Image 1 (spheres, rainbow, N blue to C red):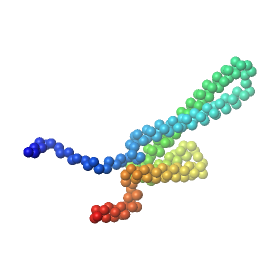
Image 2 (spheres, rainbow, N blue to C red):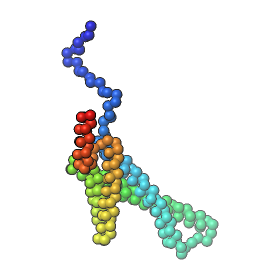
Image 3 (tube, helix red, strand yellow):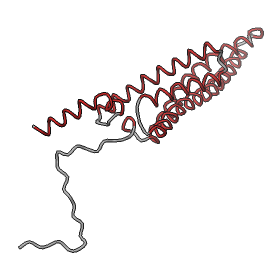
Image 4 (cartoon, rainbow, N blue to C red):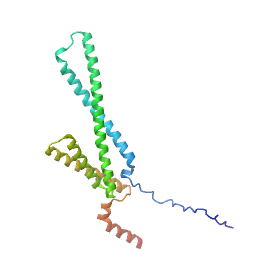
Length: 202
């Protein structure tokens, strides 16, 4: 004898074992906050390592040039010379590393912020937003650096091409993960719908 469910009890619909998993709607299947945090952190560490190497080298050469006319003549003097030099090199490298790391993190984070803003304005996630972000960041960097017109044009072209390549790569990864991309549906939508109709008939 079957018992009837109690009034007000919710009925849970079983999920088939072969049902596909939910598609992650985020770029690279990573939420925006996690993506921009990881990018800025990685960019800061990369910039800091480059700045540290550059800063230590330039500070060492500068210290040697500034003290070339007063080199020590005793062992104690050479000890103090190298001790002072190491202190200046370490301090100069640290300053340059922090400076370079902050710059790289700022521009890298700005790129992803512009990309996300354009995505939300357009209501789509594709290579167009990434290309706009690359072009915008290149223009901002050229203005901030006060590049001449020819250099700014080359920088803008590089930013556009880099954003285009990165955007297409993201779209390819999105398609591989099952997320739909607008222009792909527009270009191949007819064939896809025709294939779906034939599969239903069969």
